[in-house]
Image (tube, rainbow, N blue to C red):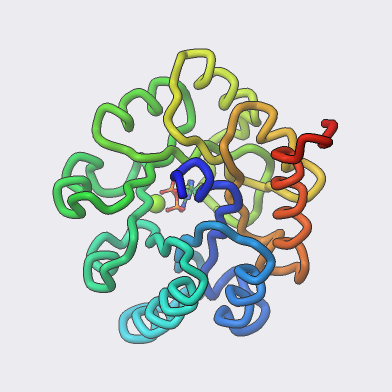
Length: 216
Ligand SMILES: Nc1nc(C(F)(F)F)ncc1COP(=O)(O)OP(=O)(O)O
Ligand SMILES: [Mg+2]
């Protein structure tokens, strides 16, 4: 499956984003059609050390049962220890070039907030870009200014063809806007982790656009 297809419904989650066992939340999300998963154990009070490692191992195993890529946010050491499928780093995380050197051919996702950051990330070896925040979100405390889906249009207009996924406040009622603006997929945290059934509804919405009878 091509990376653009794998990025279609990208569930990002950690224990902080769950009101119940993250293992159950992930299993239901994968049954609902999630195509890629990112373990993002961040915020208050997030797990650390052995507890974080144990949860990561369990969630990775569940992803393997569904043949869905397991990506680790920020923590390159953990990604290498688990032989994860890739890592996602932001502009303020470890140096992108250094991360690429350490992970070899694993997937490297990089956050980008504008065309300039997108071009730089691509030059340094990114396989896909996470672009946001698309909409207001309370999940990430230190978000940049909300530029909206328009940033995706600007990146595409700049001739950038790399796989793009939008992130930040994406819900069922605004997901289409992100795709229409040029993203290959959407990255979702709370809408899926806190509302059972959302993954299936989003998956159906996203798949419908490949349906010949589909009218926007
Ligand atoms: N975690 C992310 N995942 C994506 C995804 F690719 F999934 F869309 N895009 C963007 C981010 C944000 O990454 P970053 O800016 O380092 O902040 P944090 O480490 O707090 O998430
Ligand atoms: Mg980060």
